[in-house]
Each structure stands twice: as C-alpha cells, then as structure tokens.
Length: 418
Image (cartoon, rainbow, N blue to C red; front, top):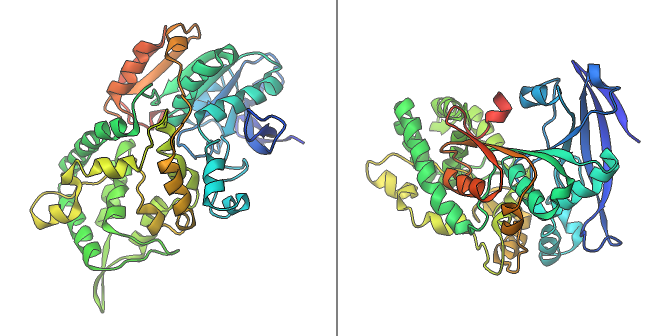
C-alpha cells in the first residue's frame, strides 16, 4: 500500500514494486524495488503531468532522500512528477550486503547473484515499473554519473520507453575496458591533487606526516576499519566534488593531538575518516564497481589495482623516501579494501570471483545509438575526476542527435549543488 506525506512544497509517496531477479526468467525468483514519488504541492492532483525517473550515481547508491525542493529536484518539479528509484540492491530495495548475501549461499552463489545488478538489469527494472507507473506512456530519464551509464544502456535496449533523456556527468565509453578507464583516470587524479596542493600548500606536509605515521603504526578506526596508507590516500575521492578540496583540507588540519604517548591521530579525525572510507552503507558499490565496465570475455581482474602499478608516483613509500608530495587516489576499488573494511571482509572471495568473471553481456548497442531518435541532452563536466571527458565526448558523437553542454564551472556533483 502506498503511503503519502508532505514536506515543504512537495507531496511524497512511498512506492514498492516486485520484479524478477533475472528478467530472462520472469517466473523465477523476485526482488523488491523501492521508489519515492515526488510532486510539487500545487500539482499533486494534476494527473497529466509527465513522469521523470531519476537514476542515481554509484553503482550501489540509493536515490537521494529529499528535504523539500532541493537542487535539481526544484527545477524538475516545475514540469514533472518525479520517481526517485532505489536501484536494485540499494537503499530500501532488496539489499545486497555482508548480512544478506549469505542467504544466497557461498561466494560462488553470491557472485552469480550479483551479475544481475548491472545497468542492463536496472533498465529492465525501469521498463517493468514504467508500465505500472505511467500506464504505458514513455517517460523522461535523468541519469547522474552511473545513472547516466544506465541511461545510455536504456537508449540501447528499450528506447521505446523513453520520452527524453537527460544525463549529468555520466556519458560512458561504449567500448573501453576497465583498464582504459583507469589509464585515463590516474593522470586526471594527479591533476586534481596538484590543484589541491596549489590551493592549500600547507597540506603537502600534513599529508606526508599522516602517511608516515600510518607506515609506522597500526591504526584501527572505530568500528574496526584498518587505516592503512593506501586507505588514507583513497580519501582523494573527495577531490572530484565541488567542495571536496576544502573538506579534505579541514580533515588534514585537525589530524593529530598530543597525548602522554606522543602524537596520535585524533578521535575526531579517525571518526571522520571512518565515515568517509567505510562501505557499510554502500557495499554494492565496492562489489560491482569494476563490473559496470565488463563486456565480453575479458575479465576486469582488479583493474584499478593493476593499472595503478603503471603510475609509480602514487606509491606512498616512494614519495616519502624522497621529497615528492603524497598523491591521493580517486574513485577506484582495490582488493585491500576487502581486508581493511569490516563491511567488506566477508565478501572478499565473492569480489575475487566477480573480478575473474568473463562472458559479460554487452551493455551498449552502437548501431541503435547511431540511429537514435530520442531527444538526449548531456552535461559534461570538463576534467571530471570520475568520468573521462574524452570518453564522454566520443560517446556523445556516437549517439544521434545528442546535445552536449560542456562546462568547467562544476565538478562531478554539479547537479546536486545547482
């Protein structure tokens, strides 16, 4: 039963849907999807409003939990009734976590289950619920980041369900292997780190001091997360957001306190680091992050970790042995995360099996995209740390009729702040 309630300027309704785990086996196992319908208060009884379904970034992140008419949602509500979908395995949809995945059986069964949590399955979920939500009418899709990847898959698999497509920071390469994605990513990350140190030169010494401490001390954060130097470097994921450089600066500034045993990382620093690093609230992100690039017979095989070895300047021990600034890393998942994070440790073997998997289905149809007739517009954030600009623009040229807005005014999270 749907439940409606109000926030300032909006009416919200909780909605739940049942879909097949495997859409090729519609009579088989099912899972539940949760979505929140949002409509402007003054349009709540307007039955002819077109629908917009929002696909969030990630993978593995639930949709936004709105408080009134925030950021992009305010603009969308002028024209649409919005559906904020928790993609399968996220948010209030049937979860996929260290607590629930053992219900599937051992690691092999868990890995097989998770092969159904990629963009192709998400698109088929959307098509299943669209018919119930709109009565069969096509709707508009807004895809942010990974949600944009899903939108391009949607254009490839089921364009008949689409009225319009809007993409923000999420035009994927149609044919790049994960190795190509990370070979393009590490130089971008290095540029973002250099820009951070140019803005906050005092952070060069602060980051080196923290890294040196971690190389010589075993640090376990509240909740059991092991803070290694590699984990500390991964805080660089902040640098892909509009306020991330400032947030990282404030975190580094308050790292140490004096104690009877000498300088130690403060409780405040440790708590903030744990909140930023732990995947407890988004384990699916770590499990299928590289799988979103899987197509064909080539495994992803811990791509980010392997490719990082091609960029030795990211090696912390090497930096500390010389006078080079410590380089942070960006949006990447590594096998050591499954040792450091209590939310991931029981899933290490499952992750290994996904990394070794071959036979991934294609996610995009270049011929169908070249003949596209659905209106598509995409915001491309120039030098986006998370999604390569060159890859995005090449895809933009491959989708017939797609209009781009390329800007360096915003970072990857531009749509959330404006």
